[in-house]
Length: 292
Image (tube, rainbow, N blue to C red; front, side):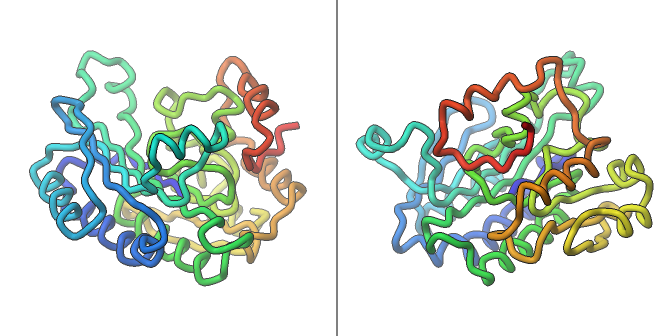
């Protein structure tokens, strides 16, 4: 899952700590006994990356640094040794990863993009099916949806998605496969108030997306989705669209239909399809794309 927001995070450290604690308790600890996990963070002023063990002491240190406002990037992920990386496939996805990134005051006021549209802050989490088998169990699906609802509400999200593909979450500013395929930089204009990161199994539409598609009633009636749920985010109506009942079971045809519905919300940069060769050269990557 990935959630995007333009809300300022520097004064919301208590909320960020609550979110991290919830994910640690519900989605990381149940698997950490069988997985080596590490905490990483980037200090705001020095850009020094630090590491802490994933235990009570390490988490307490992370929470204290957050409260002091000393860090802008947090990663809790599977800890892989250099020997493991050397033996791993070229595009290896850690089996568990949580990432938060927020810009704070790190962008200069002279930056024209910063003045027009604040840089996107992100919260991401991924859990590989390799942890529990070839399919995603129903209880894990329900947990992801529950946590996703919590994050989009707490962060006043502008958009977000849950997908079943090869996605790294420990790098919270990573591009989606749609953006990678089309060479889209998610930190540049036009932003995400009226566009999406792509088309996924679950998609969050907020007020700008809904208006561009034709309004709440139109989306609820016409969107090709198994479940359509109205939320309130930042005092306005938002809609969660869940493509199928089960994340293990959705077809390319269903994605094509969703992509067609989302066309007003999808943005291409000047070079379309520039990342296609990457996917052709890395067939082990699972990228749920229907760009052919």
